[in-house]
Length: 193
Image 1 (spheres, rainbow, N blue to C red):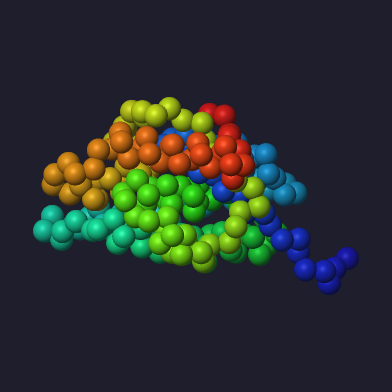
Image 2 (cartoon, rainbow, N blue to C red):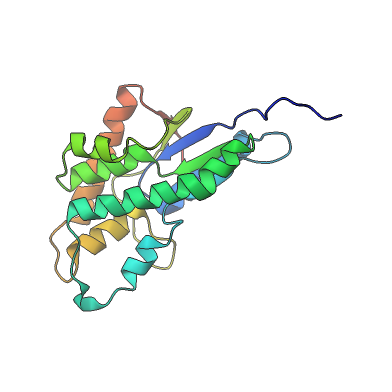
């Protein structure tokens, strides 16, 4: 029997955080908990567009981007994810987990000294999530260069270039402090690791 009703819209679920391995585990949990019919929720992760992979492959003389340029690249990647990953799944009525999503990028931009207002304007194209979570993570995450790198690690490396300008531990602590404040305001719920 065919129904003329449009499919039930899917649900966009934001997962905020900074540690790649913990974001991956959180995606698995949220995807399993948000099955629609027999299908687990879809997942959209950072650098789906390949922008940051390409930046990592750049010639050593290409220079270091400014913090605002870096945030524009994150916005471009999120726009790609919305068009090619998140949007189609939502249109099919599926639930989808976006990890990381807007608040993680705003936290990162603020840690690099970019104004909250500029960042909010930059990411205003992104639809609000139906549900928002943040992963529980320690302030210090040991780096495993063999595993998928997080947006935070990659961003710090890109801005540092050949010299250490931005302290990765300080940037991570500022991102986590922003997400703690977001959680206290009720902007997200904690997802245990």
